[in-house]
Structure formats: C-alpha cells, structure tokens
Image (cartoon, rainbow, N blue to C red; front, side, top):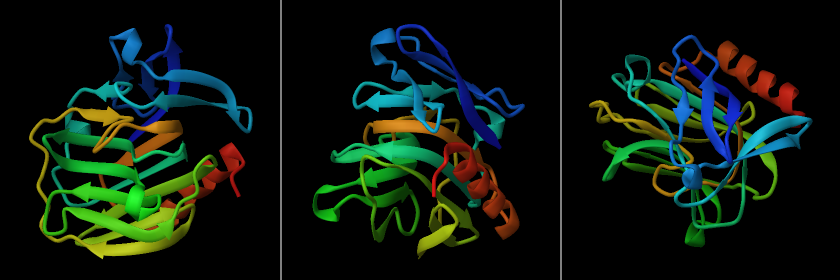
Length: 212
C-alpha cells in the first residue's frame, strides 16, 4: 500500500513523500520537469499541479510497488483541466503495463484504464467534468475491473489475462499521456479492497477535501 501525501519544494515539487511505511517517494531531479505546489488548492489543503509534458514525478521500482497479481486498487483526489490525454499515474515502457487517467476528443472526457491483457484499454461511458475536484478510482479483483467516483461504481469490465511487472518505475502525472490538472492525494494498493475498506477510503478522501 502506498499513500502519497506530503511535498518538499524547490522551484517545483521535487519530492512527494510516501506516507506509508514503504518509502516509495515520488521525485523529480530536473527542476524544469517538476510540477508546482499549490497551497490552499482545495478545502485549505494543498495539491500538486501538473501542466503537461514534461512534468512528472518518478517512483523507483520496489517490491511493494511491483504488480505481481491481477488485484490492485487506486484512488485519487484530482482535478482535470481540459485536454486530450491526462493520466494520473502509470507504469510503462512503450506499451502501458498499466495507466489510469482521462481521455477526451471523441471520447468526451471519459475515464480510461490501460492494462495489457485481454482487454488492454477499458473505457467508461460516464462523462467526467473538468475543472472540479473529485474522488476517482478503480480496482481489479480477479478478472473484474470496477471504476468509482467517490463511493459509487459507474462502470465494470472483465480483464482476465494481465501482464505483470518486470521492474518498471511508476510515474505520477504520466501514463499514456501527461497530466494537465491537480493531484491532491494518491493512494495505490497492491490488493483489491473489501467493500468496507473501499468505503472507508472514499469517505476519508471526501471528508478531508470537502468533496460531496
């Protein structure tokens, strides 16, 4: 489990500290590629603001971030600006092992999960509004993939043949495209969550950031 929460600053965010015990810190060694810290962005809480390429934060590969099982869950407090591809996070070299974000164009700002397997691209039919903060997430439990806005599931897919991690770094603010917008908090779990745990996560994020 990884919770990314607190930042240290240079001219931009160069170190986003993992608040779990796994020390999966997200870093950027080039100031020009660092996203910005925005204080009091939402309900008195800060956020990290990404302005597209080449802004991203890198988390080095570790055993606690290795994707070695189909089951996974991730939730984030995000605000998307208008754009084409805006991805919250991903692991990829060439093809996307996994990438979670938003795509527009003909898809009209719909949530997308890219995961190599039987169904490499999983889209939703729910339009996501830009320029507002929301709790957005997904999880895969066995072959079933579910998408969530706050505590409500809004799409499901079946993906029963996934490719596992071979030591890839994790990118925050990049996946199958660079993020344009804000990420206030990001949680990644190396397992699917029970309903009770999932509701606890979404309630925590809603209450902390004043999202209704």
